[in-house]
Image (cartoon, rainbow, N blue to C red; front, side, top):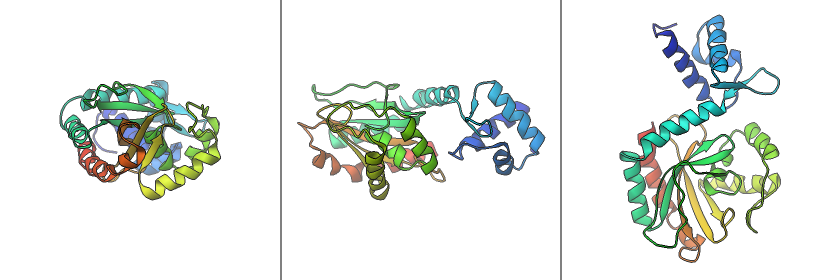
Length: 250
């Protein structure tokens, strides 16, 4: 093992195992780090006792806990309000003329990390820190589409697929069909599925070397002002902004 201080070594283990995306076992952590099994076992126990890791049903696999997810959200919220990331978002909103947001996967929800509102008086204001459902938001469906199959199916079976509007998809089968299309095309839409009359298009933000999709850029607008077909014309601009945003997250 390296010469890292014990506390930093525990954080290095947490960083490595959480980057695997899927739940992991003790032996998975040993293979990932190359560290001795007794040391890894002790550190996992410390992380679990501290509430940063949780065990899956059955007790063999670990996952990031709700406390760790809140910690990650707080770090991102503190760093996206200002600086380069906010500047990228502000420029995107100026280019498309509508509200734009940076979102992240937070457990079984989508969390808004940052947002720039349009200048129009008719808009839906959503502050950083707002949570919205996975199954009826463009960012949420994007996260589901690029999630490992086992994890996605477990989520879709457990989530209350609540109907918010007439266009909300409320069955796992209907969602799976759309998620397959999202994975092929590389973007997702919300056709008034969460809020009646509000459309959204979202693209992934993927730093180099990251597996899965954990953050997304999206534009949001009233359909009366920007029909969905018009919103889709901005997808190339969203992708360009997502590439710039990914460099700040690498």
